Amino acid sequence: MPFDPSKPANNSPASSAEMRSQLTSLNTDIQQRATFNDLNNAIAGTSSNSNGVGTLGIGADGSYNQSQMQDLINEVDELSNVLRR
Image (cartoon, rainbow, N blue to C red; front, side, top):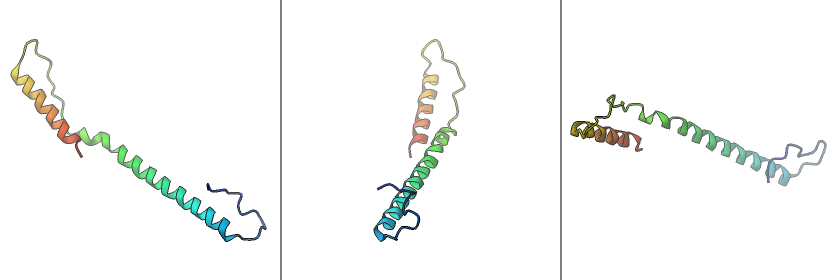
């Protein structure tokens, strides 16, 4: 049952079941919001995981260049290792 701010009604007799339901609903809402905030905070930092990987800073050679290919392979390997958790 979701939290109902209209309960208990003004000047109504106290009902333990109604109060327990209201408190349980509030507790559930607080826990869900805390989990959501933790998740958002964790996701916010994931983009920076790859900041330490530099760019190659070279243009493509018109013909096969073994050195250039090895640089590319090394860079992809470095990025793959950084992105693992």
